[in-house]
Length: 314
Image 1 (cartoon, rainbow, N blue to C red):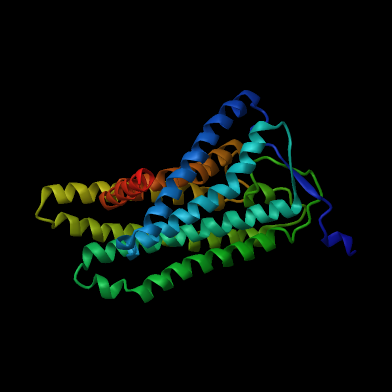
Image 2: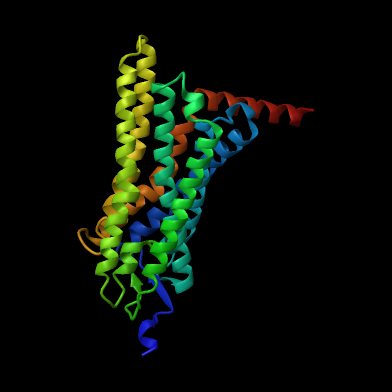
């Protein structure tokens, strides 16, 4: 009876796109480039903001935290994904699968709340510019950042522990590129109905509620932009908001479609593609959308580069 509650599977096999070997070879090169560009783009942002005192304000410190999340998120997923694409059968231990799922949920959950906090910061800055220093003071900023990280830790701890409390009796093949909750849950050889209810409710609270708050914030920002007297200012603000909303919609949309239906609703191939959208594209696009298009970030980058050149020539 004691063995009945324990998993009889010691390791899993990640299948990736095993049915399309030629596709796997092509994807390996593409994903490797995406991974390297993601790491480089986010690393540049972390270095620029860390070294430039003038950027130590809430807007850029939120970006710093977002880049740390994106680098960590990519580092948890991409190396294993590249191994899956370069080998016929990739084995991952039960402990390794647990760890990967835990950190995916931790960084994914943290990103959900960080994006919400960043939208609130922009709303306060644009709609209440005179009161902004009071609304977004250091104490409020620290609480929002801590809340985002602690929420991610709590979500990851509860969900991963619950998933791996189920027995896995075989088969041990995960029809996915990494240990994400829905494909792993499909291998559980017990009733997971209660967990599915939890996952649905959790997705609504963790993904959809922040997304709706972001939309409301940007609607208020939009009305504030329309009142701007300068046409150039309106166009610039519209461009920024459109870029932010594109990134946010991509992340929240694909994440919610993946986690709202843990065991059904989409084909395995569709689930893989949706997962790739928020695990590859958002970490790649966020540096471009949130930071590297920003004039202050560009000036700080040029200043840092010139300082480096001067040091080398001295």
